[in-house]
Length: 178
Length: 426
Image (cartoon, rainbow over all chains, first blue to last red; front, side, top):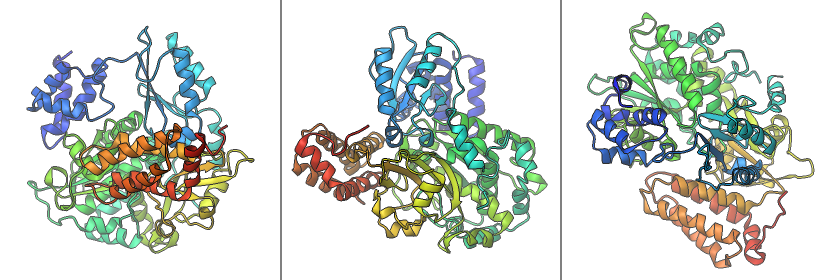
């Protein structure tokens, strides 16, 4: 994984910052993008690139919730459960996903496809409830939309609808434009 | 009102340089680069613009704290705080994803005014698509000589770096953000020194919110007087983005003059309550950290900094969370307490311990195992969290707790006495 190509990308990132240490976070994102999680080996590689100790880099990794220190499923399901999503029924969605996948929060399905976690406010409160699947936000969720989404992902098909707000949102946009 | 901040939203490819320029974009930058930096600072002061991130500090005054003669050894920096994470807030995301050039232009005008040679946009890690849009916008701007070396041939050098966070609410606090941007854990710093004296890498730094910076090109183009003519009074000026969520028919981001009455926001923009048989019960008007309002307190309430302060709460990030009669207020408070306990950086004891205890005690009450003494303990713990820590996260957890206990105490007592919620959910 730590080839010349990765080295080159790292050097480009480091050049953006007044001091090399500033590049810790983007390099952690970079290695996670590549491997799916942040390995100890990756932390050592970053430490060497930036002249830091691996312990320092590990301290940064573990401060932030988005850096994963263990492998997760192909699809990381991150359901928001903060106030606005709660008011719009995220608890029902959560219970449904748990039942459907037969896992609890923080667990991965035996086939390695799905990991389910709950997260704090994702900044999608106007289109709540929201679930982030890997990089994408699926918004205006209800049980039908979640089922359609999980059906597709489980079968390796593309999501049945694009990320973003649900179809009823069109009405809102029209109102906003008028 | 004419839409200004959101004028490009909904237009096809609104995030591209081509569309932004076709609608008059980057004219303000050109105009600004022909203006003395101090004259720009004066214009922003005269506009009455106050920070849209939550604190409401006058932007022009903040800019005026910056050194006038930076050197290559001691450069000035501008940071755009795009770490939008306050529960109930999603306005900056709209600008970032749909009109990123408006923000980039605002950053460059502000950088010229404060003589900054580098801009860092710190965007929360979850906004992956927003970060891509911003990076694309910066690349387009660089290609068109709107950013980078000798901008528009006017001798101004300034580059913009997009930096992604990685899931930590605390990094929205300005000094924690700087620690994070320097490649560290996001622990807030003691103030003073303030960022304008010693900020990023110890250099003079100004940090402004996304919406604040997006207002700047408008002030340059249309004038400070125009900006100041919008709003409630001379202390509360300009257009404002409101984030409406919860139990309304049409939640979303709405632009209105600052000071729009709260009930008008809910009725006219939000389309009224989600269900006609469930009347308004409470509103959190400025993100989850501000004191809650009862339905009665929501009447005749202009949504601006000073009117909300007078009513004992805050405009904050304008995250307006609307709750109807079916809402279990103890459950809402439990979520809020959980949020702050999860997001405390752990640096200060009153916050690290206090947020944890608020959550545990409220959880105990909700499980039916609470006692009336717990309410006094909550009040005492929250009281000891106020003003005793490096940053305001402890206050952000304590304020809602104190206001929920003061205004919806009977719901907590109902759980303690009967083991059940005072309302039936549905």
